[in-house]
Amino acid sequence: MVQMAIELRNVLKRRRNKTIGPLTMNLPKGYITALVGQNGSGKSTLLNLLMQLTNPEEGEIYWFENRYDSGLPLELRQTIAYVPETSITEENHWNAEEAAQFRQHWYPNWDESYFQDLMDRFEVPYHMRLSKMSKGERRKFEIAAALASHPSLLLLDEPSSGLDPFAWKIMIETLLKYMDENNATIIISTHIVEELRRLADYIVLMHRGELLGMAEKDSLFGTWTEVWVQVTDEEELAELSAELPGGINFTMETPGVASFIIEQFSKNEKRIQDLGVKVTKSRSLELDEILGLWTQGHRPILIDHKRGD
Amino acid sequence: MWIPVQINENSAEPLYHQIETQLRSLIISGVITEGTLLPSIREFAGDLKCSVITVRRVYQDLENEGLLRTRQGTGTFVSHVGDGAMEEYKRETVGKALESAVDIGRSVHCSKDELEQIFMEIVERKYREKD
Image (tube, rainbow over all chains, first blue to last red; front, side, top):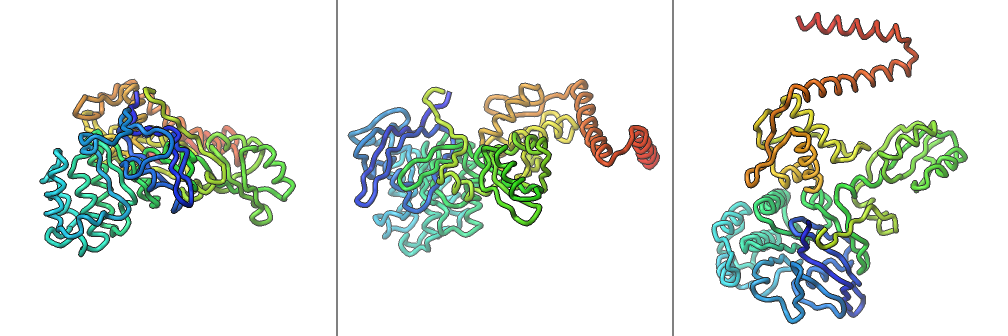
């Protein structure tokens, strides 16, 4: 039985220039769900809604299966940590130590030795004002401070922007370890494919304010395959495409060689061979290509978590 | 514990199946010995760049086959591999390799006798080398 960390029911947020939603989805507890989509697709708005930094005009949001229309209670807020896209300015005049003291006051589960350990690993200066830090240093402080509050729900808005590759690696390992040792839930918005590969269990695609669905990462990555085959001419290729209704982008590459994109290649490979067509090469599509097809309406296998499944 | 599982991203074989097949052979062939503590589901998923859903499924399948056992709070361990499983594994892997060799032989129009002759020659040579 899967419990839900977050549930959205027809959530609609009207912005001056665009509308986000209606969003309906369930985000399972204990997993890492990644939000992907182009700039302005509504990812940050969604995270802001989950922090009640902004409220929806329509629809309902549930946190751990409860609704809080008149504000999130303090005890719940204390179990949620958020690393926003741009750091809040209120802490700018403090150094890391002072900011940590402030946060410790509000988060009863604050783990000071864990915080210091992360700050050391990230090599963030302790006594520098947060506003004087480089973008990467500030980001590392934010991530360390978010984890030190020991959250059950961690919301990360492009956490790795500004991080160098070494810090990035530490962040990935730290998040995996945190998930391993705590029954936590992470919702992360990111553009970095390698980050999705290393972290995500589920991938949610947003496009122009709409939710295109949620897929299991491994099934998503295996969805599409580009296949090169030996065919003599366009005519033979047309015959082949008629036999493969799920295939798209049938193209003659050079005389004798054609390519196309097909879903579930493991199931279709034998059919292609049975048609007497020789496959010369195949490759799985990259995530950006898969997401591109998805936004054009070529959906992968989607999942719909139901409460109590 | 680092487990030498190699994922082929361009293979048509589903990810979970690749991981399961390789982990099973590592256990049955004795590369990973009885009592070894496997990585946690989250750790292994991070290494293999797959989701915890896939690793959980693999661990569950191999647990059902009796190759793994999970102790609450400690983790997933390699179980005792019975002689029966070892024999079955031998037959299966060697059988598979020979089958593809025979397919290749047939695709270049070898007769049955020719194939047998080549096979015996290779067996003779390999076992002589070994002694």
